[in-house]
Length: 101
Image (tube, rainbow, N blue to C red; front, side):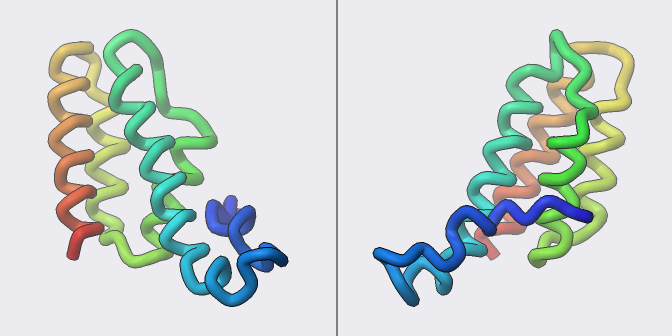
């Protein structure tokens, strides 16, 4: 089952309806933080982790085109660390533009 990044923000008793209405926004924010972390660390580390996959899957399920997720996965498959970092940053920038609308 896919990770629901919005779950911690749903049914928050002291925020009531407000929390439910914005839970998906917070979920997208948290998923993007996982992806940003992967970009920052991909030069030195293999970031093809289950958490990253879950973040990409979550964003794809919540309005981001699947092509961006595929491109990010392909960027992380790049063997040269410098080229991998450049490719991952470019796709992360494209993701940001896609989320803005």
